[in-house]
Length: 340
Image (cartoon, rainbow, N blue to C red; front, side, top):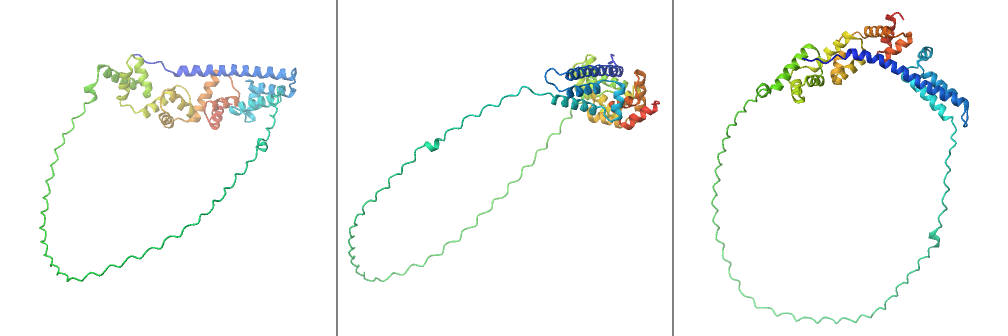
C-alpha cells in the first residue's frame, strides 16, 4: 500500500525559502526606491528635491536592515503599519512632482440665439359672428277631447270560493351510502444494505479507507485524494470516504496533534495548516480549540526553531513570531524563554 509523503518537512523547508525570498524582495524594492530618491535629489525635469528625500526614506524603511528594523519596532511600526508608512512616503513624494502636461480647457461653445424671440406671434383667431335669431312661430293650442259617456253599471257576479290545495307528501330522505373500507397498504420492502449492492472496487476502496484512517488522520477530501493516489477511481474513492464512518471533527483534532508533535504552531497557524489539509473551517477550528496546546510554550518552541535557522534581535524575533500568528504576549514569552 502506497502512502502519500508527509508535508511537515516540506512546510518547514518552505518557511525557510519564504524568508529568503521575502528578504531578497525587500532589498529589490529598497534599491528601486533609493535610486528614484537619488534621481529626484538632482532634478532634471523640474522635480523638487524634497521628493528625493522622501523616496530615500521609503527605501530605507523597506530595506531589511536590523538597525532600522529595531528603530521601527520600538516606534510600534511593523507589519502592515510599515507597509502603510512606505506607501505614505511614496504618495507624498509623487504629489510633489509638478504636472507639466496640463490639458487645455475646451472653449465654451457660443450661446445659442434666442429663437423664441424671433418666432412670430400667434394671430388672433376671428371671433365667430352670432347667428340671427329666428322668430319662433306660435304653437297651435290643443283642442279638448270629448269626455266619454258613462257605461251602465252591471251587477258583479259572486266570486267562486277557492278550493283548498292538497298538502304535499313528504319526500323520503335518501339513505346514506356505506363508506368503502380502505384497502390495506402493502408493507415497504426492506432497502438493500450497502454490502448487497457493493461492487468489488467499492469494497476494496472502503477497506483501504478504513486502513488509512487507522494509521493517520485524514480530511474527507484528503482521504478521497489518497485513495485516488492508490489508483482507485473517483467513484470508488468517494464511496469509500462516504461509508468509512469517520468523524471528521475528530480527524481534524487527531491531525492537529500530529502536527504539534512535529513542529510548533500558533492557534491561527494551526487552523490554516488544517485547512490546507482540506478540512473545513469549522473542523479546523474544532481541532485547534480542543488539541490542548499551551500556546505560550508553542511560541517558545517556534522561537527556538527560528534561532536554529538564523540569528534574530529580540524585537526581530518577536515580530517574526507575531507574523506566524502568535499574540504579542505569546511572542514576548517565546523570546524571554530563549534568553532574549
